[in-house]
Length: 257
Image 1 (cartoon, rainbow, N blue to C red):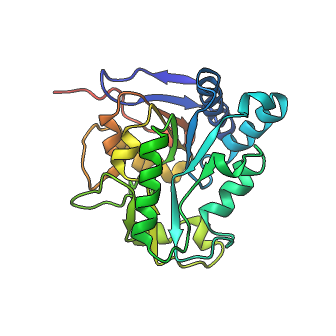
Image 2 (tube, rainbow, N blue to C red):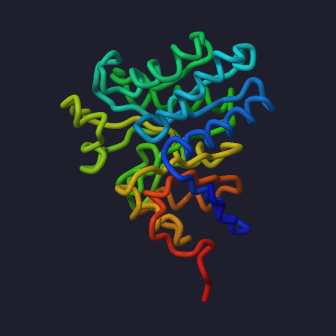
């Protein structure tokens, strides 16, 4: 494990030897926050990047179940237009990786319905819940293939709050969808403003296919055309990456001329 010091404002970067080591570091951070805040609200992304961290979290649960008695989990986003029990939904993923392994009761897990009759009203429901029950304690995020953060896609402007998102071509090629042949018609996602109110943000970046996006993130240039760059506006972001993703990184913090 090597460390790159954070900028006075900007992400701290922790480079692990491999995916497993990266996942262990992220899990350790989550468990430390849970020890400090027993009713922690964990905002959970889906996909391959956090999968091992969630598996390790379940192992912690089996060793110390009482520590998890008050943990709450909030689904970060969802593929809209798919049945809730479809294998490609974020719902199915989180039930498999967190809800069932951590034995979360219904009142300690909340997320977007995947096929709501009124998607905008569903987004308002989640935003209202978060306004009352938040803020997010730890947000576990991944880095999208086009720099999206959750399903906040590159655009001229970005909504601050939970909203219905038009899905980009890159998002529609997500492995969760590709492997099942699912074709969602829209996305439901927390907004950038809600994510930036999190107490702590962990960005998990693994594999050579994420190298280009990670390099772009660490240039410190902020643009809604690269939503992940808005993480520079948050005071407590840690990027956990493996050596495959970090290969060829320029010295960080970047030199300012």
